[in-house]
Length: 535
Image (cartoon, rainbow, N blue to C red; front, side, top):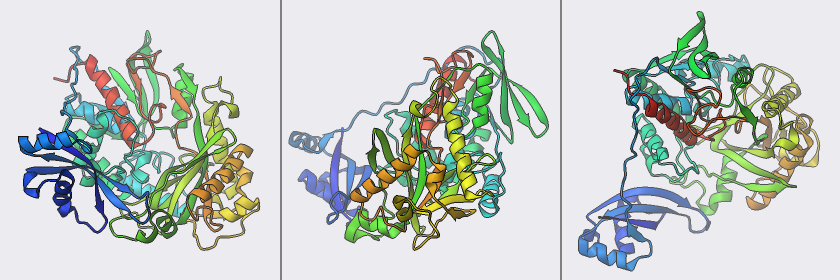
């Protein structure tokens, strides 16, 4: 039997090679008593700025005699939980037609991978381009402001998460989340993501991971069609029989036994299409605001004190929350040592997001500062009202920026004082194609403008320097989560269309890479429960 030893503190100067020594000391045993040791989890404990350390959870094996003695002592020692493999159920009904997966973001990628792994040979359609071509399209947009509406930082292989920090933190307890992390590591993500409490991949490594997974899907018999946009469904007595796709060669009918819709929450046209097709949807709460940038060194000093710059720490993270009246205000998708990026997918609208490379070594650190949006702000009886609210803010930011996807931006000091910024100081905006000094209140609803002010002031009291006058805010951060939920029943299907499985962030059931991937896997397993694999 193995034992779990938790909260094993190791100072920054200690090498991981000395882990066995620290474990033996915690167990009050000799190092020779530890027959084997495996790291299960590593977290950073920075609560005391003068005593920052790493906290390890390790699995150790001992002799039966030493096991009994350690368990009797109790405290941070416990028996390791029994490892149970998840059991999958496979149907007996033959597949009458292929299974189609729409979208190659995290939900679609993991749905397709699961189906391919177990012999179902899915057809994947993705409106954007492969990740190599997509990177070139995104680079051109950021340089010139020329937007490709089908291939950008939102649409294409890997989905919106490809151009992000690649965070893998999640609050869900689903065991599939461990499978997601293991699969990502298997296809090229850093091995450390298996044990880090706050793992990230970084956009520079994530592009290779998603490409490797796509190649694996092809190797296992799946098919991937790029530049192919979902544009309709065919039903017989509320049963899906085919989907329609717009391809470079024209409109195509694709017969299918099931369709997993994993289009992401940037696909506004898909929401409208489903509404016209009679699918049941509802508006859901979400949050919007701005991106804020600080010097990375300032955030590091505020979080790490005298240990800022230590090679084992890297760039510091934060998560802050507060209130503005009866609305929540909080930071979201914090990107240490990263940049603010243009993530527009439609002409005439500004969308910002944050992105980091694996090294997280850029000059600035950034995060969204967002305010809760709900039925007080739009007609909750209209499923698409939140979507229209989002689109109007994106268009307002575009108008304020003056066109060509130049984003409106301001210095924090000016924004808090209610005046228009004339330029920028020590903090240089990282957003490209460029920014225009502006009064951001001109493109934000009053409650949001006030909420952002309240939030920045409150966060400045929690994290030293957060409200520094020369910090930069850029509008608008609008794609934090879906403004629409596509309803599904207890079988995971759309109530009005058997065989149609809405999944992931775009369907309103996930938030982040891991939870979206898990929801995609779950949808695939629902289909597998009904049909047997291909012959």
